[in-house]
Amino acid sequence: MSLGDDEDRIGELRAVAHPVRLQMLSLLTGAAMSAAEVARELDITQANASYHVRVLARNGLLREAGTESVRGGVAKKYRYVGEERRSGRHVSEEDQALQVEAYAQELRRRLADRRTGSRGMFTDAEMWVTPEVWKKVEALVHEATVLVHEEAQPPRTDGTVKVNMQAFLFEMNDGREADR
Image 1 (cartoon, rainbow, N blue to C red):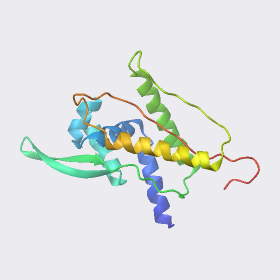
Image 2 (cartoon, one colour):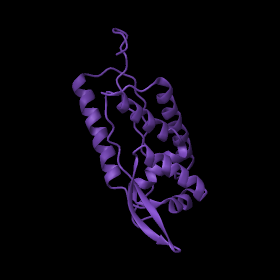
Image 3 (tube, rainbow, N blue to C red):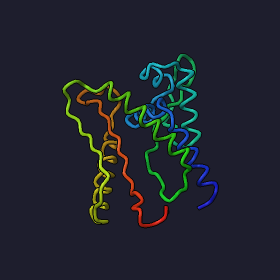
Image 4 (cartoon, rainbow, N blue to C red):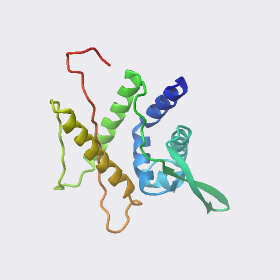
């Protein structure tokens, strides 16, 4: 692994360590949209949306997905490239903390927007399981995240519901060995 790979990953983490950009990635999973469309959907200024779109695109998280004519000009449309994260990269504790805080802020925003009376699933677990069970859990959660991303639709598409999904899975130090 090269230093350039680490710098790319750190750039990606810092890019997503902002609640508005997390919202954008979710939004741009289901549809290609221009910065103006993103701004309207998220109720932010177009300048703000354009800035955040550029940050995400510069860090390889969005790809250009066409253009549209708008009042004599051309607007680029962007789409989220997916969450194929490479493992084994060193990420500083500071960058991890930034990303976790951004996810926490975004979860608080989403919980405030939760439909009253809707079913939800929350789990918190710090436990010991066999490596085989852990591998199965990782595979099932991966399958669920792939499914929800692949089936994402444009906002307010007939027959759809707005949902939230966040997952954090990781092995912990067991106290018998030094940090890896």
